[in-house]
Image (spheres, rainbow, N blue to C red):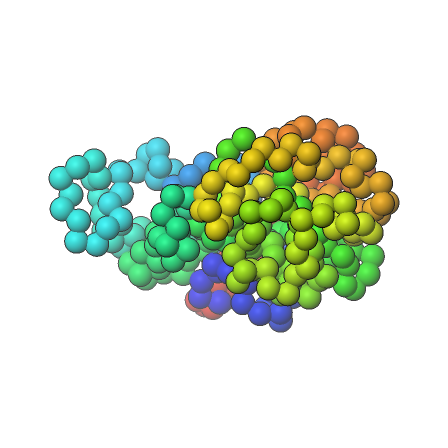
Length: 316
Ligand code: CP
């Protein structure tokens, strides 16, 4: 594996899931694999889980992780090719990316979308610049359109908890007060469908996701119908994609609570965190037996470890 930025195919996904489960059983199995190597974790946006879990994953492999909060500690980056830099930006992405590439064996980048410039976001403009100028393997810590490390951890969590081979998995839109990116929802669809799960996506009218991620899923505006007999319910907000980055309405009645799961006695509930309690999801679910959110967060370590390990093995 050279880069890890999206789902590739079923067999690679299955082997990453199995490797993550192997590392979960024995985190220090390959404790010398990354000896003498460094991974740079570059954040253009905030993070708790992705930052710490990827650091732990690298450490488990004997690799040194170094974090740069580019948004706070780095120079203001110019992204535009050919820009005359006589305003607020101090360093061009092509210079910064090349320098970082020379310091590290692997680079991992978090770069959220603008949610204002649709074509730049859909084209993964910032990510593409890093891919172009670092010359080193790149791991996505969440890009404008995808969050593959989260999805891999989610697939590990589903595999651990599934009672049947092809569970019914529901992605349900949740209310929020801010315009939220599509990356987690897109990636979850991409991976759930790629792993051949029976996926239903439910959301209010106007919140259709990009079809390239949902093709093959059942899509409905009827949340009650969607939730019936679900095995896994993934709760997530996202802003409109067609009316790009907009909050169309509050949608408070889309909160997931126990009442909504009356016809889904076995449903386990997932969320990538951070979660807005009692807005997206009720306390009773988050603190109850259905919740897998802490397992998902824990599995982030082993998902990242599997990916880093695959890349190190390619470099060896
Ligand atoms: N789920 C997730 O990516 O969490 P952070 O934003 O805290 O890294």
